[in-house]
Image (cartoon, rainbow, N blue to C red):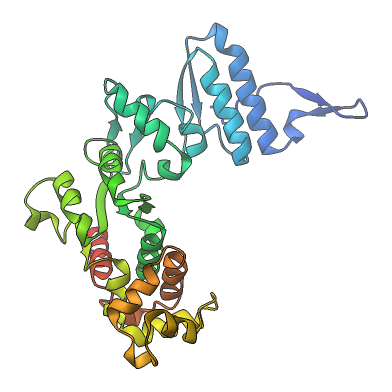
Length: 316
């Protein structure tokens, strides 16, 4: 069996001084690109070309160039790849995702409008990492992702090892589209969601079934929102301690002035949550809270802890 497409090829490159350098002495990346070039040259004589992991040894920018080469020709190709930079050059209906248990999933090629919206708004390397994950955790924004990932680490869970991707939606209203892309009607990942209370009904409705079967099993709801949840769970003094110790620009007098009290002991859950959820502070406040998350916080983060416990159960 030939393990390398160039094993039986005598091929040389011309160096700047005019000497010939055998391809066997070139870098893995050069050899990989040369192999793809040979495939492309051979396409006129071949009806189907199969390529296994063409992105190996290539920088992401080279992977994008490779993807254009693969999609610009008319020959039918079967490509096995783990690169989101390659996948996103193809129409979503052309992609077959194979889950760890060997199940193949493909989108409905007839849903042209839905496919166009998916490709325009979501078909990017950022989301394509979730195509073959075991579990996709959908959260509203970056702050939620930061807290969930920190809580998982504090609980001793390796999300990468478990095949879990935490994906921020950029707004709760995007859950429907992404759920249909990644969930049981799309590429078949198991979906868990973390959502604010006021947005939870639409998420539960999209998942379907009885709310009592969905809540706490697939969808986890923060009491008011994430900021209210961690301020209530940890207590204002502990949250303020984390904000101040994180070296992210928070000052005690600034916090007290913003919430209109004289001492830390007077700070309320509601006042501190409002301070943390302001758009210019939301993510850095989450980074500060997450940065000090330890195993001692297990069970203290409300819906986030319930979500992590669910992930732990699903991994057994």
